[in-house]
Length: 333
Image 1 (tube, rainbow, N blue to C red):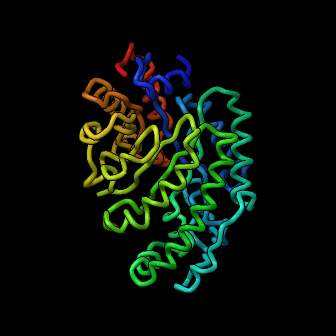
Image 2: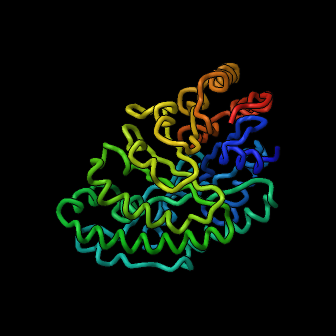
C-alpha cells in the first residue's frame, strides 16, 4: 500500500498491510520562516517516510495575528517564549477583533503549506496544526491566568474575544483546505482539569471548537488532539474529526481500549514518547513497539506518540519504530 492508501483504509475500517504510523517534532530554528518550516517538515518526512505528515509550526503563530510576539530560543532544542502580548487587563479583550487570513503569520503558514505540497508531490496526506480559540486566547493574554480570571469575572468579554478568534480561525481553515488535506486540531492545555472544569469547558471551549471544525468538514483527514494529564478526551468524542489522539501515558488519562468502547473512530497513540522513545535504547524501543502490535488494540488504529516528539529523540529510535512496523504482515483494521 502507499502511505495514503494505508491511512484511508484505516479510516474506512478496511484491512491494511501494516499499521500506519506518524510522529512529528519541532525544528525550532527553522520554523521561524515559511521556507524553513517547509524544508524541515519535508526533511522529516523524507527521512522516516511517515504515513501522513503533520505540519508542526511554532506554537505562537496564531496569536501573532493579534500582536503577540515570540522570543525565540537560542538553539535547536529551545522553543519560543512570549515576549509581548496584547491582553494585559480585562478591558483589553475589547481590542480582539476578527483578522483576515491574509495577516502576516497566517499568510506565512499558507505559504509554507504550498511549499510542502509541492515538495511532497502527492507522497502522503498532510495536515496543518490549528490550536483552539481558547488556546489562542491564552497566548493573547500571556498565559492562562488572565483567561481563567476573566472567565469568572468578565465572561462576556471573554466570549466576545473567543468569537473574534473563532471567526478568524474558521476563515483560515478554509484557506488551509485549499492546499492541505486536513487539520490537526489541538485543545492544548485547556481541555483538562488543571485549568478548567468540564462545565466551564462546555461553555468556553466546546462551542468555539465546533465552529472552527465546521469549516473543516470537507477534509480528507482531521485529527483531534486532546493534550495534558487528566484531560476531557472522553467528553470530546463527538467532535467531527476522523481521528482522536491523546497521551495514554499521562496521569489520569484513559487508555486506548477504554476510549475504543465509546466510539468507532480511528484512535491514535500508544507509543510512550517520554519514557521510551526519548530515552530508551533501540532494543527497548523495538520491544515496546512489538508489544503494541501484538497486544489488544482498537479496531481502527494509527501508531503514534502521545504528543510532539522531543527534539533530543535519537534517530535510531525513530528508525527502529519504522523497521518494526515495516516487518508486519497483514494487520487487522
